[in-house]
Amino acid sequence: ESQGIGVRLAHGHVLICGLGLGWAAAACAMRDAVRAVTVIEFDPEVIELHRELNLFAQLPPGEQAKLRIVQGDALTWQPDSERIDFLMPDIWLPLIDDVRLDHVRQMQANVGAGAIHFWGQELIIARAAIAAGRTIDAAGIAATVAEWGLPLVGPELPDYAAWTLAAARQHLPELAAA
Image (cartoon, rainbow, N blue to C red):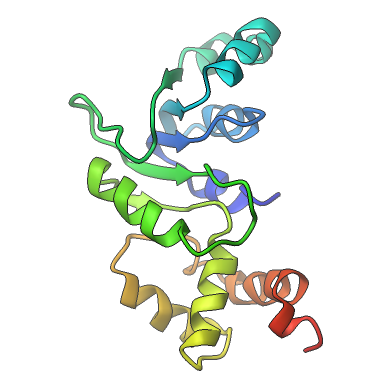
């Protein structure tokens, strides 16, 4: 659910940073708008577990062929030559932290993706909007995102402000009572 917006908007060559259960990678590979999915995973044990379980074998052959898993560091990895169209980072353990935006900027500097949606994006936007004295509505979100200079996707969706506010009320203590 937390990666649903990113999966819905994924297109072209998708770079996913952090394999986890592989759900986002498999879901992206199933989209017609996606031609390739590269996953960067730091932990070789996670990669080995995926090899043993072979979960991606459950996908149709065409979708399996779109997937590539690379052992590497998401903060330093750079593509050889192929353009990255869509960046989906998900390398963090806590749902909310103070390093995520800097990490996304670093990954984007390395890959130059045309579009980005990162795990926890809505909560990071909400926190930044609150810190800037903005409301969590379309205008407050747009102003916050504009300051970051990243090609974030999601805020253009009609219900994005409502989703962001609902997530913020559930996960941000400063809005829990609101």
